[in-house]
Length: 115
Image 1 (cartoon, rainbow, N blue to C red):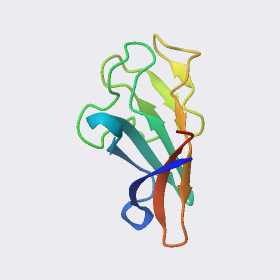
Image 2 (cartoon, rainbow, N blue to C red):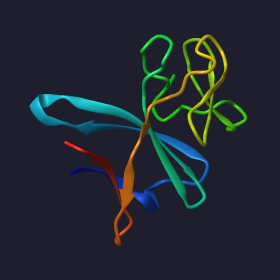
Image 3 (cartoon, helix red, strand yellow):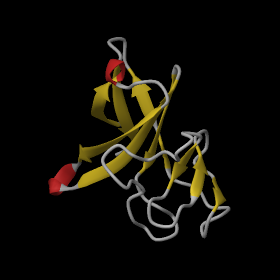
Image 4 (cartoon, rainbow, N blue to C red):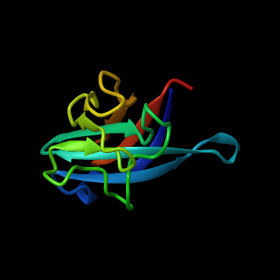
């Protein structure tokens, strides 16, 4: 199992979204979205299932104006915060790729993968 440090959870404000580039082997990066809703923290690939492009329209801007959904900046698709499921737009019925995370005793957030 591999763990990659993402951030300190104290730096994640409630009901906000954040983009991170996680360094991987061979000079590659994984572009992710992190959302905080109270004590729940979720992470998804920053990758629209419709066009395969990043979701954000500006750094750390992934949410709809109402902050109730993740919104693709290119075509306005809306995804639920809880599951990343598309409820509106050209990729309706598809989902964002959820990522496994872990928080240690110090409150550090890690991305966990099987590699």
